[in-house]
Each structure stands twice: as structure tokens, then as C-alpha cells.
Length: 228
Image 1 (tube, helix red, strand yellow):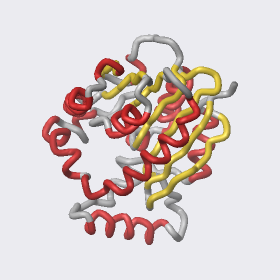
Image 2: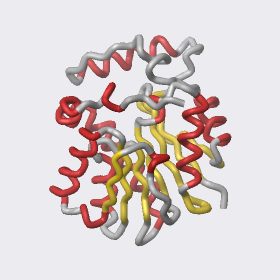
Image 3: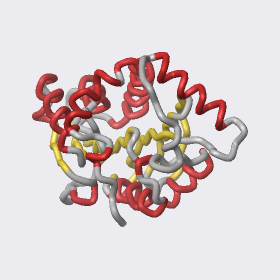
């Protein structure tokens, strides 16, 4: 199956302005990172974390600052985004704990299993369900038994009477922080699944006990586990 061209969404110009553009959403990101650190804190020392579609490295920097003996493998197909991620990692002095891989996850060389993985606002760009399942299955395959995955994606039940009001509130949020957003791409360029459909997808991909633990309008975040 053909993968999305990352330059369609994240060319170098977009990547350079990405963090400034989304600065108004900092409160949501801060809440995400607080919960991310709390949930993964049980991994212990010397944990190995796979950050898939890491973008400019927001969750990488948050985790690396909180856990100074963890190692991170960063996977990002967009050249512009991984350049920004490298620069931020260098400025934070954490490159000695990072392995950077420019490309899709299935091109990452085989290595020892990871203790946890993050996929933050990535999988919704895979509008083909089979391709999305393959993506999550690849993450599951690279985790140790009992390993955790946290994925955050745009999600909603498009058949629900709550959907249209939720989308309007989503638009209002963007306008409040000084952004314009379209909505015609939802369900077309960005896949939206109900909570039940996402749970089913994660289970079919090799995870157990997918748990929805955070929602901010269309953003929903799950923690799942590979069987022991």
C-alpha cells in the first residue's frame, strides 16, 4: 500500500514554523506530556523508548528531561521535521541518548525490543484501515512483552449527533489561538474512528486493554499494552 508523502503535510517550510504555529495549543500539549510522563514512569531506569512520527520532538524533549537515563529512538519520515527535532535535541544536550532514523517505521533496522512507544498525532494520517493496522502491528512487534504504547490521534464517531457540535468547538479552539482550520479534510485526508472502532483496531494490531485516558475535543489519547 502506498504511504502518505510526508512533504504533503510537513515540508521544510512548514517544519521550520511548526512549533511557533502551534504555540497556542501549549496547554493541551502540557497536559499530554504530564500524563505521558506519569504513565511511563513505571518503566524504571535505562528504559528504551521508540518515538514514531516524532515530528519536531515535543514528547522526546518532555520525556528526556524527566528521565535522564532513558534512551530514545526517533523515527520520522519528514526530512524537515527530523532536522528540527535534531536541532532541539542538540540544544537540550540529549543527542547522546538519541538515535535518529529518517524514514518510515518499517525501514527501521531490527534492534532490541523497546520498553514503550509513542505515536502522537500520527496514525490518523493513514486513512486506509489496513495500512493503519499494519502501522500499529509494526509498533507492537518492536515492543517487549508487556511493553506499552501511547497513541494520540484525532478521533470521533462521525455518525454521532455530537459530531457536528464537536467539530464546531474544534474550529472555535483554533480561532481562539489565532489559527484557521478546515474541516472538509476530516474523514477524508485524516481518518476519524469512534472510540469503539479504535479499540478494535488496536486489539487487532496485537495490543491488549486499550484504554482511552485523555480527550481534548477531537484529540483522544490511548495507552495499550503488548501481551506479557
